[in-house]
Length: 357
Image (tube, rainbow, N blue to C red):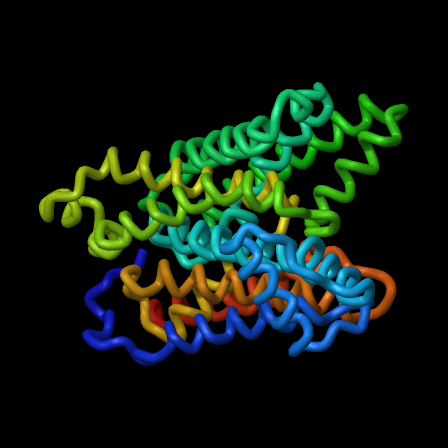
């Protein structure tokens, strides 16, 4: 759809990477002190430093009763939640960049195209059948399988040569199908109130109650998917010149498409399995990075990881700062992302109309 012939030779903002890295660190620190408990920044950092020293020396930190409570809040509750939010945001940001690069389409995004819905329906099927009790790996595996199925269906229905309308219509249809299947499973299990409540909370997307165990379970597959995304950056840039040109330049297109699909499925599946459906992050983040740093995927992929992690941490922290009630982050990202998507769609329509005129 677009070519890389108009890509700038130099990045627009060379310092964007360090700025985003600093922003992510600041967002993580703020996440440690926002919420009930009255833990100040200095105290939180001091307790965190003490915990890290105890890990090195293998001796538990000596804490007063008040510090022990604050330490439990910072170390056991807020830090793993914030790190998991950063990891999920990074995976969704990179998944969005990979999807847009694969389809050569700025509207491509795992949530918009139904990839997240595919991951969700497979996970809900696992919940309904009780498969999640078999091990912590079951839900991520099911979510990844659902994401792969939708991506393969999108390639079959829309391919990489069709326009925005065809891709969006295929994604809407697949998303509607997955949503209908999810609703049908909930209807069949309407008497199982515990299952219904679990699935509804999970579908809204949340980091509530997440712990070090959730982070440890997500870390391996997420890092594998992020590493694959970094590996695919060069071929993503080449693909923007067109499939035939990419082949002539040595890109093994079928292998590249398979690796991109599997990487995206792994990223979306992991994020969906541990946090539920967090929509529109994969759409917003690559677009913002592209506007700030240019369209080259060598920078777009890592910068999308940094911005995605920062965005989701900020959203999750903000959801806890409103009051006693914590809004699901997935709801907030949808409220932010839907108008952003409409703005991008209108902008694209104007550009197409101007080119035709």
